[in-house]
Length: 165
Image (cartoon, helix red, strand yellow):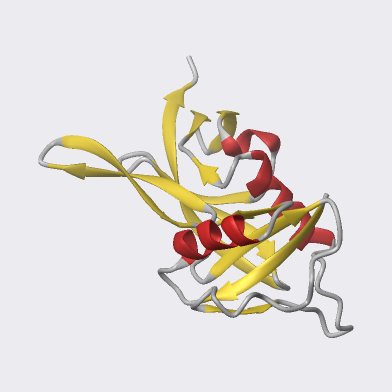
């Protein structure tokens, strides 16, 4: 499986993924979303937000053509490395495949807490991808550090805390 990253207008990720999926046969475009908990009027609600605003992942078994169709508005370009290579490599590839394995939807994970130790027991973070740098039990959030596009990024994700007994 090959993966690529398409740079696009922030806020149009889902629309672009749908358009690419319609136009390109054999290409699976995914606009990665995270599901975050919010407390509203005393009740927990879950909302989708872009995991990486301005980016859509493209997955294919074969080569991806260099040019995007002109009718995919708000899609700017395929990201490429300094060498000119556009296919994702190394940590970028691993990150894209984590998104792919989770079907582009990063749901709430269950974490077990014991003192300062945190262990993910269920959900997208259970495969050990990323490093938890902060936990907020009250807001049901974890901040996870990932490497992508040569940069360390910290993303807030949903987490349901379970205390060890």
